[in-house]
View 1 (cartoon, rainbow, N blue to C red):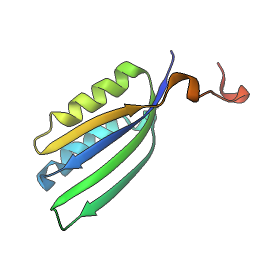
View 2 (cartoon, rainbow, N blue to C red; view 1 turned 60 degrees about the horizontal axis):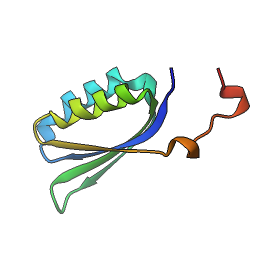
View 3 (cartoon, one colour; view 1 turned 90 degrees about the vertical axis):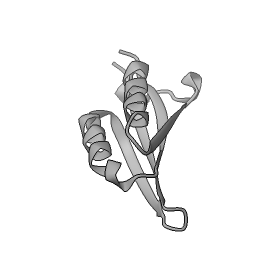
Length: 92
């Protein structure tokens, strides 16, 4: 199945959502390339970026589930299809 590369940007306003958020990311771990979290204490939020390589429907499902968590906002940015080419060793 064709995969896409994307970054899911997550803003967490309610720290009580951290457990559910981490459990959700754990369920999608096989699609996650990397993750970076930055606490922004001055605003009382946490900013998380998650790089993924997965089928578009999987990315959409993850982003939607994250966005339905209380106190969490999630948006996805996809890399252009022609900008991300697999190396010869990665082709199936």
